Image 1 (tube, rainbow, N blue to C red):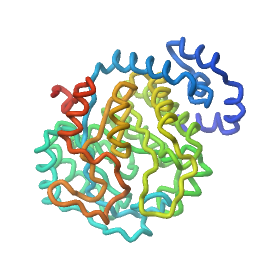
Image 2 (cartoon, helix red, strand yellow):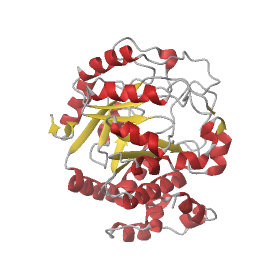
Image 3 (cartoon, one colour):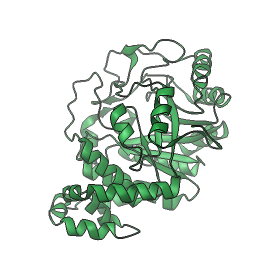
Length: 369
């Protein structure tokens, strides 16, 4: 069974009509419940729920402390290649853009790993564009082996693979994957994915399931907020996460909430999400799936990330570079996928987390702060 069956169930659902039936009393009834169903989630995502945001935030905080304590896990991303065979209208890596393309050699990855490890970080996420010809399986396995020598946890964010390929990477030390569906709206998905393997909606949708079956300890999913109607996309993201958590009991499921940032393309997002609505989405995810991790990236500003420390977030990136490499040598600004907003160093992010009353986690078995 694929999660696609859930998308089909709601294909003709009138989201707008449902939202018009929700008032403050309906939202407060949902907030009194311990386990939420699908319509409860939609109630918390409704425009009417905005008036209950403080109550949502307080309950989200209590649940986060109950399941995660006051900890924030830190990780750092490393782009090892920006070649891409896809034409995605919104992405700075898409094959039609004129950015500088390169793939790091293993020697360069070793240097990057040493530079990152020197910051104290022990969780790394390595990323590529979606170009199997530029980053074939043998290369990915070699990257994983190199990084595993330096870091306690190695995760990846790459093009979707077959289950057996994910299994080989797990055997080489990779313990987690991130893969964003971008949007769960198939019509919008077709409009913004114009060429390449990424045009296959189902192939991408089922990739987290393949990763979980292959034995990854952690699977992180999300939708790019700005591509389509965001309340619907968060709804399906949440359902996808619960389905994965219920199906793969040994897999830690987490969410990201990436908002559209400028990418060097002419793409104009249609569903921009303001800060208040972002907090509503974050707290709704926490209330719907209390044990799920929630990642907040450097797409968000330092000020805003500081404010989210007690609202349900559990995982932060730090000192992110969105071009190839950039830690051992100066980052090439013409190789970036998108612009980040929070440019603080690892030490500055750690200091802010501690000042906010939380404890930064560097390793699965160790805390520093």
